[in-house]
Length: 327
Figure 1 (tube, helix red, strand yellow):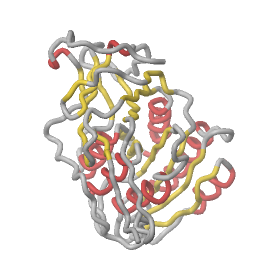
Figure 2 (figure 1 turned 180 degrees about the vertical axis):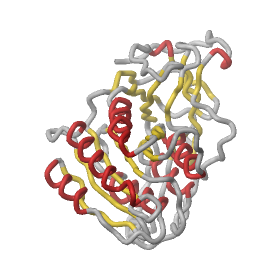
Figure 3 (figure 1 turned 180 degrees about the horizontal axis):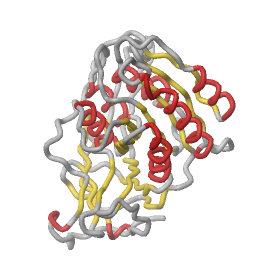
Figure 4 (figure 1 turned 45 degrees about the vertical axis):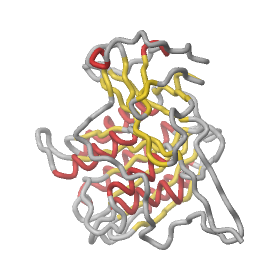
C-alpha cells in the first residue's frame, strides 16, 4: 500500500512521540574485524559494490499503558533520516505475516544457570507457538565462555526442541557481544537475501559480558546492518536495576526490539508472550534514503497520536559500499 506524499504542513517535532533518545552513545559507521571466524567480502579477483536502494524499517507503537497500537495510517507517522523528513513512503503496511528468521540465544554462564531449566521450558513453548513451519525458520545458540551453535536454522520444531533440551556448557565467563555478533553476521545476515523477511533475535541473559572480543557497539552495528531486531529477556526482582539492564535496553532500543523483565522464573512464559505479541504486531515502511553517502545514517520515528506513545524502532541503518580487492 503506497503512502501519500508528505508536505511541509506537519506540526513541530514536539507534537510527536518518538523513539529518539539523545543520551544514547552513537554507533560507529565502520566496524573493524576483531576475530577470524567472520566472513568478509575480500575474495581476490572480484569487485563488489553495494548501496542501499531503499530503507526498510519495522517498528511497534504502544500507548502510555503499554497497549500495542494497531490502527495507524501513513499520515500518523513522520520519519527523519539524518534529521531530514522523509517526503514519501514507498510502502506502508501492518506487518503481521512476514516470514520469520529467528535466533534463540541462551546464556549458560554461571550467573544465570540457576534459571536455565525454566528458560529452556519457556523458550520451547515460545517456539512451538510462534514458529510457522511453512514459512519460518529458527536456530538455537548458547554462550558462556564461548559461543556454540546447537541447531542451525530450520523449520523443524522437533529438531529445535531437541537442541534447546541439549544445551549445556561450562559457565565460566560470558561472551554476550560475541554471541550476538555471530548470530547477526554468521546466521542472519545473508538469510533470504533480496526477499523481505522479519529477522529477530531473542536472547535470555542478565546482560553481563566479561570476555568478548567484540564490543557492544559491534553487536549493535551488526544487527542494524542486517535489519535485525534484538529482544532481550532477563530475570530479577521488581525494583532492581542491575547494570546489565542498561546494556540490554540499549541493544533493544538501537535495533527496534524490546527489553522484558520477568520478576521470577515463573513469569518467563508471560514475558515470552509479550515478545510474541510485539513481533506479530508491527508496522512496515520503506522509503528511499535521503542521502546516498555510505556509512551510518540516523533514523527517528515520530507518531502524531496517541500522546505519550512508546515507539520501538531501530535508530539507524547503513548505506554501505564495500569493495573487495580486484585483479
